[in-house]
Image 1 (spheres, one colour):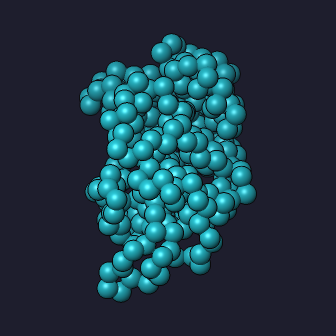
Image 2 (spheres, rainbow, N blue to C red):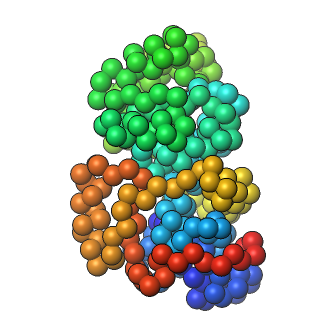
Image 3 (cartoon, one colour):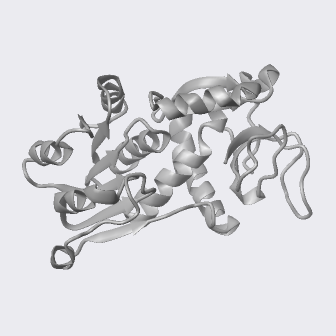
Length: 277
């Protein structure tokens, strides 16, 4: 669902010039030499980034922005916990929260190297999610707890997360890798006014994703261009070695994004700046 490249054709009524370099969130079909993208979901590649870096941006920043800024309503200076801090979404979320909300960010990750990366991009602390992460975070906040949690695991850990939230806290799910169901204490949820929500972007209409794209270009792209927010490419893999790319993901050692390179000749080039789409 992530692509970058050069506009080759446009549909009726689309006011984007052929030859414009863009990155885009698509609805599928990105594993191809050519791909159709709704115009509203196309964005200029931030100045100074090449096509590989551009391809690493859309899905993770759309997801982080949608869940943290729109659904969780992250406020200035709040405490945020992001599980999987060195996933693409995790890294985008840590940086957005720090740069735009001055949030106090905590993260979980599976290795010392990954936890060091979380700290380097703005997390106050990072802990091992295979241990007593909730007790560690509770201690790090001196018992105060967390305002917002972003999680992709769900399942049996759901109540542990709710117990970690402050009153009026928000738990946002982007997946349910540890289980689709959970038993939770509804009385505690009601008493402390907690919110549980979640989202998937793929079925959303282009108009919704277009609003996300506009906010990203206006508020996040300038921070990427001046270096305050960075994308991290774990590895760029030739398109014909797609099986190897998936093996990297299956091993779960990656930090950031794995990008498939269709055209090596242009992948590393930095496109000339274009007018806003």
